[in-house]
Image (tube, rainbow, N blue to C red):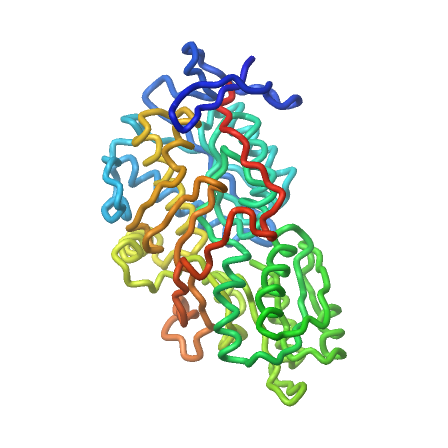
Amino acid sequence: MSKFSISRRGLIKTGAMVGAGLAMPTIFTRGASAFTNEPTGGTVTLGFNVPQSGPYADEGADELRAFELAVEHLNGGGDGGMMNTFSSKVLEGNGILGKKVEFVTGDTQTKSDAARASARSMIEKDGAVMISGGSSSGVAVAVQALCQEAGVIFMAGLTHSNDTTGKDRKANGFRHFFNSYMSGAALAPVLKNAYGADRKAYHLTADYNWGYTTEEAIRASTEAMGWETVEAVKTPLTQTDFSSYITPVLQSDADVLVLNHYGGNMVNSLTNAVQFGLRDRVVNGKQFEIIVPLYSRLMAKGAGENVKGIFGSTNWHWSLQDEGSQAFVRSFGEKYGFPPSQAAHTCYVQTLLYADAVARGGSFNPCSVVEALEDFEFDGLGNGPTLYRAEDHQCFKDVLVVRGKENPTSEFDLLEVVEVTPVDQVTYAPDHPQFAGGDLGTCNPGA
């Protein structure tokens, strides 16, 4: 069974054999246009693979809410949400290419093996033509590779590691969410202005690829402005009590703690740090500070009072006043009774972007989708003008720096946007050292 790829000019070229060891999903053969799970009836199935258990389960629950809302809007239900503000106008509320959208779900458990197994099942047993979701970069990298082998599109959910569109980039994979480098580039000037250029930082880092690239990015950006990194310690993703990791911070001469943690990990490590009195300390003649490179509303809610005054970065926030953000917040809020998280936002947007690419290309063939998304410029989806760069399938857009609000007005009003970092400040070359070693390859339609 040959694998095909479509060039920018739409020409079909024969490539290598599909990776061994992957059972082939259902293939509907129509000559040279055959591709994995081609929809032949009146419906099309999408696969939403999220953490329904584990440390990132809160993020996963919000992702599922967003996916359900996106499907509702694509099928013509509700108020249409950001379909009304999206700069592309090809989606008509009649499904995708006239086919009603259905979906299946899986639980990644925030584990790469479990995520691959559930994604494989959705492709092979349920006929999913696209997979999305996830709140862990380790999961995203694993599932993206699986989708490349199987010949389906992977529209990454919440994945922040440089690796996803760096050394582990794949032609069938696309990321709307920002990355570790962008967090470092956005945060550094704000941190320098707030805390000065003479600081000593201690890093606690989640022991997997997201943690590694986030630590690397924050270290590079802060050291470039004069900060010294005094220690960097890896912590297990399964850790729930970080007390034993906080004690050495007290014994060091660090005056800043950087928590390269996300989800429940960050809630627990920040809570432990505050309980140990870090925020009340004065070290090297300076008030001790804590930084959370990647923030979310759900994490802020979990950490409560402890987030007040703490800086971090985020991909999107429900308080933004642009037309797209307001449309999404209104739709989500009316359906669920509370504002969406950044995880919900990126998953909703990715679903619309996939559907739009299929509609613009006139085909569910993954290579048609790739061609439609590469170097696609769009607006109206909540992050300002955005580019899906062809070289690495990474979206480039403005990045938000936020801070825990001192006087919140509600249980949802926990973060304030202190800086909207322009896209030019967070843009980098495809061969930047933090993204080196990757090979996008060519699209794989699977047949």
